[in-house]
Length: 164
Image (tube, rainbow, N blue to C red):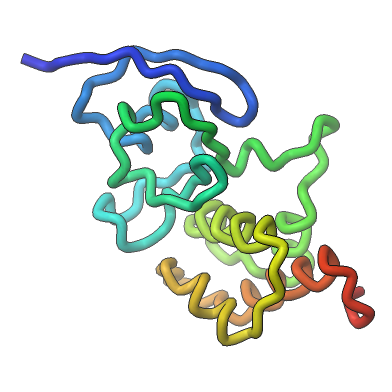
């Protein structure tokens, strides 16, 4: 017999509440109940990063994060990055500019990891960025383009002179 619990949280700035099966993952709640299709079901064991979301500013694999743990949390998905007028965020635009997408399946999760990096306000070396982005499996091998997109956006946000 399934048990259910009411979960109240904030998703992309909007307060929500949902009755969820206590065994359901956050991925399932976001996709099935809120139609956040940017949250991809990849490996479902926390290895590929396709389901990454920000929870209170920290990146998590939502496939291994129970929906009931979201109680009182602030969750951001790729859909939450769009500006009010529908314009893409700077990191989303950088992914397009640097051709950091191929099939696009892994892209939302990688971008959410990049958002955590960018919002830290810290400067990182390319080696550090590679390590911070290493929790993603991209079968289309767009890694160098992804690194360039994150570097470009980080440099712009930090006001570096060589940023375009």
